[in-house]
Length: 102
Image (cartoon, rainbow, N blue to C red; front, side, top):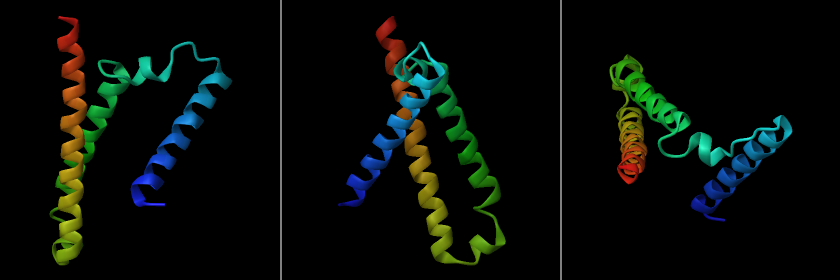
């Protein structure tokens, strides 16, 4: 199994678990409604992504242990790049949903 296949299997397992928890709680609104574009849940994901980006910038990019090690520093910067790309994708989905309503 490739890494991408493993990630997708993990994602689907987590999704199934969230849906199971919803059924057990008697949740009336589906995940897609509560966490899809334009929802509070989607906005929350955008906000948390931004918080983590700020935390990484403030706490890791200038941390003595990280700055001394080229590989660690590169890992931190790559993590920032991935999170920044995620932030842009979530934001674009939010905006696309808003544009479709108007």
